[in-house]
Length: 297
Image (cartoon, rainbow, N blue to C red; front, top):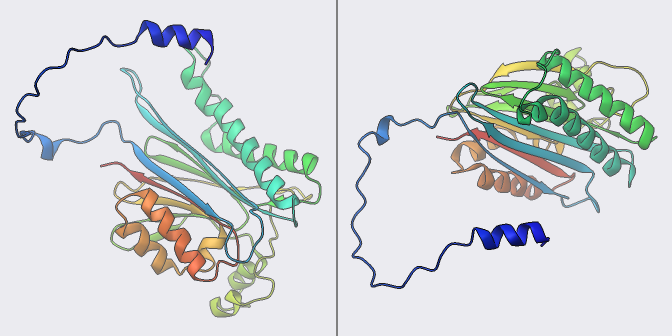
């Protein structure tokens, strides 16, 4: 501990309180307005989990999750940055590509969207959220091409501001909205060969699930050809959850089981643990990564 912190702790050390006989405990009285109380501003409970899986010897996935609240008289906003990347390209290349992509995207969003909140005075953001997300993906693309030639990765990022969620997506990791009544909404589109063949009516869902090229992507971070990421903006479901995951989860755990685990778990941490366990129980053929975001009640 440096001198500054030592002096600070000594200066603010609480005085010793003389020991006295404990007072008899009184039962807590319920708050009269407890039923009508709502947490303001809206805040989110977040958890994430990872596993190498049962059939891999190293982890090529990377995750980043930042959740904070900016509250004051003039502006009150929850703010979150959540990113998952699933690397590919063989040993070393995949894990490095995913790490470079996540760090580059996270750094871009922090500089452009988070740090301005911490400055006393700052110029207003000229670009829209979607434009900032798009430029972040392109920056990640250039970083991977430069630092990890031959490697590639998926990238799915969610930026939460208040009740608005902006998604940037490349590859076949996924983002879902899950609702308490069992409904779900996939917010991303898989950029895989078999998904494209399904969209063209050349493969059924059952055929796609066992296709030998089901993991081949036609769009990924690190590919040389220019591409545009998928960018979309949504309203966060007030009673629902946002799930980000790699295909090591959704590829082996049926959607109905994903929803059951999320909606029956008391908190995001338990849900993430159980989701990873379910993927491993299904064979764990790939690395597993998951981030779950849920509004606090």
